[in-house]
Image (cartoon, helix red, strand yellow):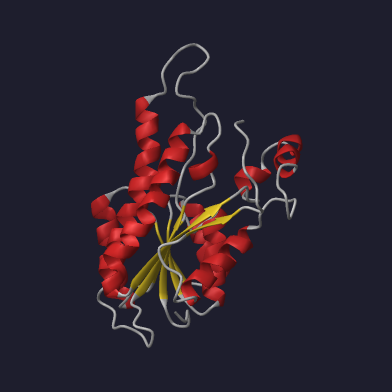
Length: 257
């Protein structure tokens, strides 16, 4: 799919990996609508990239009616949705049972599931419904969905039981969602990033960053958010790539802790 004059939705698009994807989508000629809870970051993205290229909607991706209404507004204002990139997510550090013998907070576990897994599916289902309204392009495509998992789906570390469960769920729904939407000309793929140079990771102490980088075979550094954005663009443009989860991690396999 050619990005020129397409309409893309990016959840979590105001910062980190989502912000990098937003930048490259705009560079490719797309109009982008950012879904993000952080209003100040969302407005900053609009100011930096231009109101003609980027719009911002503040919402909780796990809220069904709010997401449905947001897509209705996009269709009313822009007439179409061609691309959906799901980057919104949260993470916590908590073991199944802590050092004091207390079980994992169930409400906290549920919250991570709601935002990361249910939120991804919620936005994807609404995006797919909007894409069905498109006329097929010259390659019979109507739309592309790219979800974000993590290498934690495969190499979850201690304290990542909630986060890994959500990312494993995203990997698990990639192929059946792609099969569900195949006859409609909508492709679905997932990126599983490794340790990326996002603001959260860069805020970690240098010795923590160095210990992580030491385990990455090549290139031995943190991944750049722009490299995530480049892969997003490639998935959109490569019409034969469907139902796949791609690790973007420099070949690392995370240790238990």
